[in-house]
Length: 434
Image (cartoon, rainbow, N blue to C red; front, side):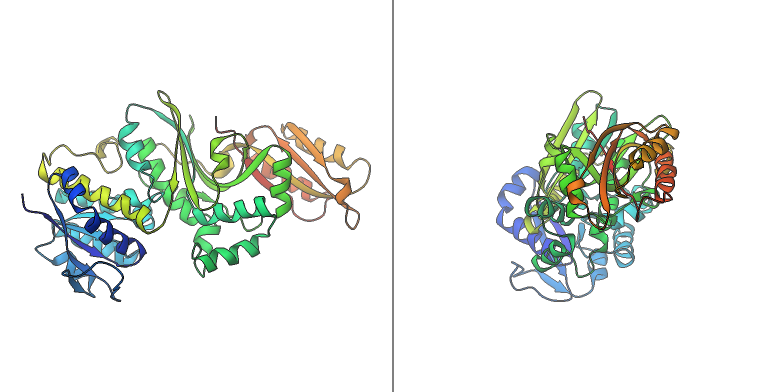
């Protein structure tokens, strides 16, 4: 059969990696797909001679690729929202299949894009949008399709994980490690998406939709960053037997779906607590399979290109066989998506780590315990560091049992109003993940 012709929009790190992998492994890929995959056109504003683009038609207009009648599959790797959305919708309207690595696009505009793709009878594949080279979307959508997914939790932003790993292993400050992450290219000049949890929330939104069969609802995801964490918090967590990770959590409850990204204490003996550096991991709990962990490179040239090319192979297989029996975009048939509500963070339950800066006076601990008790919050453990007294203040570290967030918010407001408590109470959620 004639090779399937692909147009790649964007020749940055992932685009270049995709070109290289397709050329280097052309024979192996053709054997898996059932026919060859040929890069026929590339759209880039800046030619990149380091990538193997010899003999490929080049353009600086991404929409020319979407309109090219010879192109069967458009690969969107330009990133962002508006232009990428316009490009993908144009490609779909022209009857072309789409492969994308754009998590922001899918999380925010995926419902519209998938509806348009169904109307036109084409596929939109997006494995590379979540966790780079880890095939976690395929695992949940296909490998775990027999399961009712109870919850999933993921370290799905390598920059944040690198920062927290360095803070724990080397005692460095957040600001110091962030500067290195930017120098190494792990973090952008504006690191907001990474350190404030927005990037992870994009990815979590996608995973939750596939896991629970709900529409994409990024606007309802709770996000909290890691900028307020100190080396002291990391060390206290370690002393209590925990590691702090910037975690995305999606959990099914009777009341609705929890969808939240925030710093989290995880028991140090859990596998996911020992995922360090820029690596990613996603833990999925299903009623039949139990808990499974997917680990690997969450970003990078060829790791992400691996997922892009895998999607190309899947699309080519469909083109080569029966196009009427496809895996749904979000795992569940479009008319079977459920209307489970996304819970506000105030209705979510968690255990909590609290760091309270208090005056070194008798009775302060009793006051703190009383405020928590009045709100039905039970204390699991307490640590006081008198040796760290400074200016008459000592850190008081508490870990509570599980309680609704609203109760904890009320308790923190009352604690911060105490005359003997100085400054804001630091709160980090705790997850056992078992």
